[in-house]
Image 1 (spheres, rainbow, N blue to C red):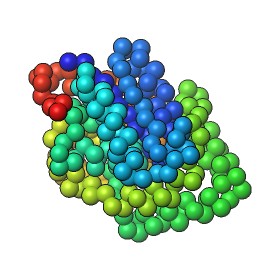
Image 2 (cartoon, rainbow, N blue to C red; image 1 turned 120 degrees about the vertical axis):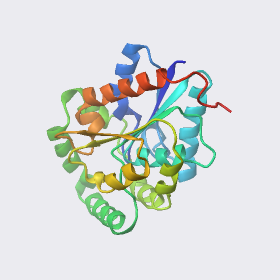
Image 3 (spheres, rainbow, N blue to C red; image 1 turned 90 degrees about the horizontal axis):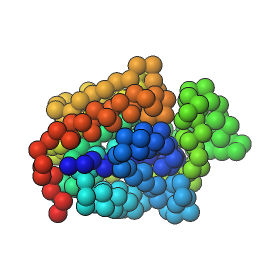
Image 4 (cartoon, rainbow, N blue to C red; image 1 turned 180 degrees about the vertical axis):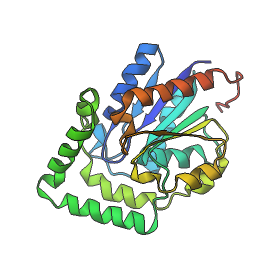
Length: 247
């Protein structure tokens, strides 16, 4: 069975952050879908809601699952949403899952601190865009630098999205995921904070830590992340036919 890759972006970014992966998959003849969540990218004028985000992911997954096995890939906020989605009590029709830069529980002091910092940056001139641009200029390679922000930055959706994440029950969801699962983190990613807990709850998952890499692992090391995609696709292609229900 062929594999279709569905990719879900992180907070403030958009589907354009996946262009290096889309190009890589296209060159291999593998179909892919990179979604824009509500309030992001081409849907910037919409309000971000968890229901809307899950509906977006589910629509892309079920459309792809009509003809292919689905590899779901989520980064940062998108990864957290995808953990909750993949671990639903009624499992969605996905064959494998890559959770990138999202081994953290978005609750408590850590979430409050992050929201406070984000609000502070948002009050800077140009909403702190110049600060983000400098950081990206210094950390991202030329082949992904422009793509990462090509869809614009969803400043207005940021705080409501962060607040919404606190209701996710990620640990319960992780316990229900019984498909091939890969955690991918950059060595210096601040969202590695609960990495050991996540891997303990999902002991069959494979943990891949990319050296000398920050939170933006997909854009900072695109060739490495593409290799992880290739690994996951090869794994799914080797599974027995009909393993995943498309009901």
